[in-house]
Image 1: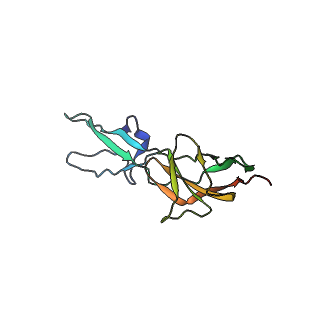
Image 2 (image 1 turned 90 degrees about the vertical axis):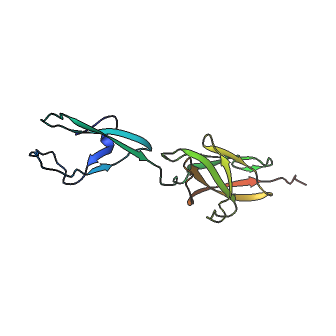
Image 3 (image 1 turned 135 degrees about the vertical axis):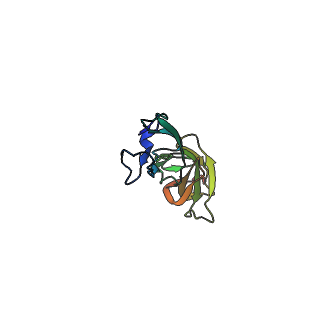
Length: 170
């Protein structure tokens, strides 16, 4: 039997069913680690015997790591959303679910991010970031997320438009 705090994250492999063994017989037992979240998992493999050994217990340990980059930011917005004479814009979004948590935003202005040129990054504590525009006009801000495990994917981006007008009327 598999018991313990994370028993549901370990399973017997195919063809491994409970059975009775005669003295001297052996049985190969395959176990699978099926984590549902990152971090170390512990369970116990118990074998019941009717000899002097009694119950044999072995500890199962597994460490699950985050191997995927976050998905694209959800429901992106920008404030101010219209034309602004102030060159400071707040991008906001909903973070996608990520086992490691979201750590950074990467952004590029007026160009899609690439692996070679991902853009600039800002460390995050939430789901918003402030950016300035390089010049007056409408600028597309392409942004994507990096998780605490350092994983990012430039293809998982969202975009918002900033409208900056620093020219006073004449």
